Image (cartoon, rainbow over all chains, first blue to last red; front, top):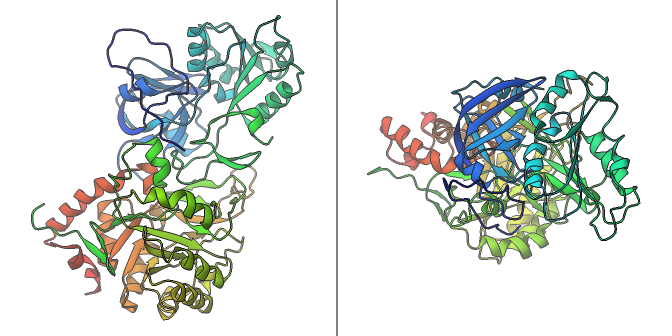
Amino acid sequence: MAARPAQPRPAGDGKEDAVKGREAPGPAALHDCRVVESRPVGAYRLISFVCREIAAAARPGQFVMVRESGPALDPLLPRPMGIHDIGSDLISILIEPVGKGSGRLAASKVGDRLAVLGPLGRGFDLQKKGQAVIVGGGIGVSPLKLLARALAERGRSMRLILGFKSRDQAASAGLFRDFDGEVFTEDGSVGSRGLVSEPLPGCLLPPPEGEPAPEVFACGPGPMLSAVARISSECGVPGVRTQVSVATHMACGVGSCQGCVVAAAGGYVKACTEGPVFDAEELKW
Amino acid sequence: MAGMDLTTRLGAIELRHPIMNASGTFDVLEADAVLQPDLLAGFPFSAYVPKTVTLKPREGNVPPRLYETAAGLLNSIGLANKGIEAFMEEDLPRLAALKAPLIVSVAGERTADYGVCAGMLADRSEVAAVELNVSCPNVELDGRALGCDPDRTRRATEEARQATSKFLIVKLTPNVTDIVALARAAVDGGADCVSAINTVHGMALDPWTLRPVLGHGSGGLSGPAIKPVALRAVYLVSRGLDVPVIGMGGVTTAQDVLEFMAAGATAVAMGTASFRDPLLAGRLVGGLETLMKERGISSAAGLTGRSHG
């Protein structure tokens, strides 16, 4: 893979730049970052930490590798976390405590320090026009906040569909209150009862004459991504593109270990450096 | 630090400090693109070992390939690689820019493969040494690597020895009853050096389904969890043989480097720790100097084997 040029945003220029697309990601480095916000969001926890460099370089759909700072060797490795949002010098991540590693990170308190490697990976490609259909499931909604902001800044019309198992998870829909989202829960406790795949066919209609086809952006559990990929490939509207962000176990995050691979048409591809965002049609479902 | 000599030697290959990388844990060409564009010039390790290559390309094992255990990492990558021909065509020329000796790691299914691979590399000036990986546990579920059998280890080394005059390192598996016998077989076959250890056989079960987590079923354990196993292997092998030993297995801190050297290593390799911090090796060199100075040890050579008494 060729080296990509760094294009850091000048610090403190006072202007709110548009969120950048994936074409010019910045260089990654390991940073020691102070936690400045830690609060529960239903089943998840929102953690924000200070890192001007990553905030300046990060693109929607990119991720960071995060662990506690310090010499403790258990948990041993950092965990990949999608970048939920960025501020002028802040990075936010949303954590679902599922195991020892994510549980410890979710317990981070204000003032704690995190070792953060990033920004990493290829994020969403924002070059196309046409209506954006953003589909998130469970903790997979996390990176869609920065994506939605970037698309809004580009003036793209958007439909935002967020799906959860239960009320606890659906609390994270509140993080998207700047956008007009539709919420689905499997148990019907919040929003409509059902899966996010149900409203999707209705979003993928032929565009008005001369307009570009809709584009789907999705992040969530494997079965959801698989359903989204199938529905959009079978929708019959020419030119519909589907970008999916996959989640896998990672060790290095930088392309060294080959542990995070997913099956693509031409063989395995690395989620860390060739993804985590892929065109759905590149992958084997 | 004045008066400190951290240089060490593997045959004619001089290393500016003792810390190299373990094969498969650091991809400098990827890292050069992702982390910093001058990594080939400012390489933190004193030698570079790329991911093991085989005669034919290998897809590797079905995912999931990784699972973290207590202070350890289980992997079942399965020697995924593009094959030695593509490696020599695409990667070797780019690695010529590297400011550190290049040690190419090769593996085969049959003993003859080691000779073929070593022969292909024999005339390449970019290559300082060849590592024979006879110990990957991830090729068969029972993990019966060629390196579990002294006779096959000796024959694979002989094949490579006949094909090249380059410095030859045999990487040993800990998954045997008597690692010194395997090391001796490698030296009998013509090895100039042995490295110890490759990963330790291991398995993890999914807490809910109670099925093996790794797609391949079992895998190899690395990281701090295996350091005592590795340290003992380095101690035994270095006492039993007259060739230099490259020590590895859980090296994470400067203190670990110090201990592996004292156990008998001439150089050490860092693997899993690079996943915590890809540029850690460079930071450990200063720490190693401090620890040596505190103990009145002025050279890497004076540290090697200090535990032997």
